[in-house]
Length: 461
Image: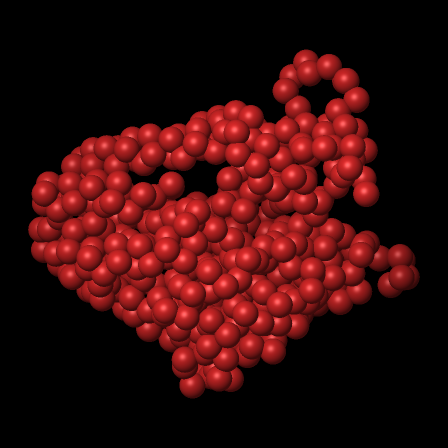
């Protein structure tokens, strides 16, 4: 068989963890596509990329279990492990799982696509990329030649990597390395490329975006300056960012919510605990008074801002009274949603050596109480949207209900500026990914909104 007629190698990505990991895996997929690979099922893939997270409980066990599943389903595939667990375990993964021939840490993922090409060519080769780089490991976003061919309504752009905070519970500084900023020009170039592909909603990503540009690797562009520059790009309708640190939230960034209409009225602002004493043990660098003052200033700048947060239950030594402070904080800050988890030891962190661990049973009981309260607040938030007008960015077709008649309509799904999932029905042939549709919210479900288009006959224009 000639090389021209050889079948294209197939790849498959498995991703755990944060949006940054999802973004990294999507980049690996695009980069492999530009190297002649095609995406295939796990059973049929020639290479499998497993992108890992070590923030939550028992991440190593989850990775070992996933690798065992890959071996059972596709023992012939070349496997690469990337991300935080790869950074943490390194060569141990290759020793325990002979099928693993690539280990790429947080900064080493940039080498993964070319590494897979080499590994398919050299059967005995094994590659490891675990060193932290002194600067941001920038990479071709692999978007060239794609303008107009594939609409991507929502895009995510990495602006920095790593963290220097060393909060007591957090393993990120050990697995992502010290903070290092991408150049402002590179961020703007990638944003322009996404806009050329039809993106109307861009999220800037980093472990602590507030300190973008403040490290030695930055090019002098501050985070507020970056927000203004991205917001000014032609074609951008919505701009978001994650994750900020409350301690480092500048007045200029607060003012951006008043000055930039493109900046969405939704902000994820991690709190972690509502107790001042727990926050001090965590090393967060603020107390509830300072946090609530920031919330008040944000609401003054953007009265309709909606806040979500992260909360840890059962931090070492957490008393019932300290936990109840967190319950009160949910109402005091007015969170519309939260991501809450039981504390778990992460190796090498200060909290892992702290005494007075909270029993697992008590952690779970407290978590249930917190999530019940937050679910009630989330339902109130969604119910309060009913009857309001906004716009929805269509991202794809919704799954029709079984037995729904074919009445010449299509059900689409997207998100509003506050990040709520919205489903709406349109006349057939009108909807498309990337289209902004003016809507009125008609009903609230448990985790989403229903809406109707305002003047659907005008949408075609």
